[in-house]
Image (cartoon, rainbow, N blue to C red; front, side, top):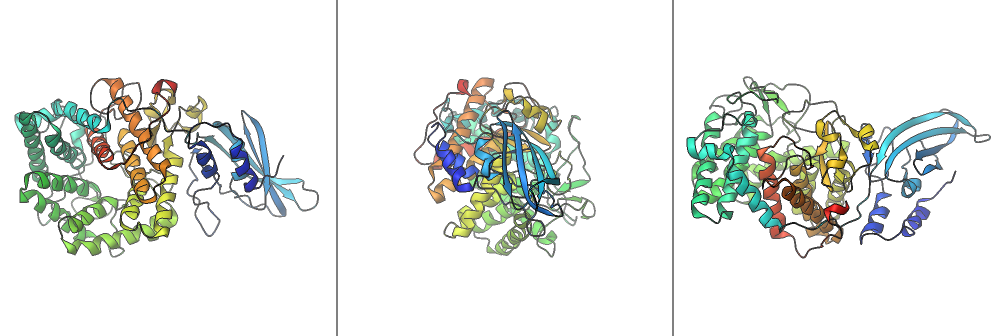
Length: 539
């Protein structure tokens, strides 16, 4: 048993065999816990977490009469121990010594007389994940061409061609049961492809698909005078039934903003004011329905507007809509709405560090049970873009990105025991050996690798690199982008696989669209470049 101070642990990092150019930096950074909890002061956000890149601290209880606590972590490397005054101390002193894989932690209270054990403060089994050792991989094609290929392939699929041929959604594409999300992505994807297509006829047809999808979605939207007037529906039973739940009586409150942002992209391309007005009408309904505390319920009844359940919206998408209406089009009346909603995030979600997953096919759960990284990344990006000169805002943004990486980024293929610890019952979580690492996982209840999740993480690190100039952020973003091109090439279909793995899985149109959009943005705005040391075959 050793009692290792953090300063010595840092020295131990320097003794590691040199690997990637950022390896030592990544190990040293991994010793700093992310928003560690303290009873009665700071919530423990990691109650249900199952894996960590950064040294965690757990909600273990004090034992009456204890003088200190012995932390013992057992792994395939044997046992590592240290002592601390409190049972919720972070594992920083032994973190460099714990190998990737399963760790069993036990914290024993020691008495004041002879240091004898007097009780157990807590136990935890978790997966110690690999720190960043990149950059990883090389792009199969450049990022812009990767995005163009993805949208080209999508354009030729039945779910897009149906809009061009019939002016209607493909009745066989069951995921159109989520109209705001999927039809909105159709609008966005085909608007983008119209400027990438080399064939003018294809560009014209793509715009036709975008306009028809937008017009259809506007026609499906709630009529004037209803509680959520002009909001496009979250659920729709107008296509062939599929495996996903459909609740036409419910509205999830962030998806209308997603569709409105797509309308704005289409307006920018075709200059048809109907699409700008459709987006503004959605924004006006958000303004009308914002609660006195400046937030919205996560789910509400379409007919009455009454909330369903206690969960509240993490309003990053409505804020994006308001910000764009203000910044790009000069509609200043939406600024107070966006700022009030963002204050709610800062005073509630950031304070509690509660980033609950918010997806239409996942049931809302109690705080911390099903965390995700999407809204945390959204907040980080907004802080970096609008508060770049404020050191506290930048530090918070970096902390949010560390959280997102800690819980959802997998740099290297997990070992076999990952399945034992991290499987959530969702099929893509079961076999990490099939993943095209590095990858980004979606949410605890579907702890599998998703292309859109990777795109959002790329965008967040891109923003962090632009503000801080830290090369490690660019290296991390490029590593994920490289992995996406490798997975795209493996499947030979052109589109990005929704599940970034070598075994088949369901294909979500919106995943390809948003991933392509974010890859294009990365290709256009990232400066320089750091090419990876490893081909995919080595990882």
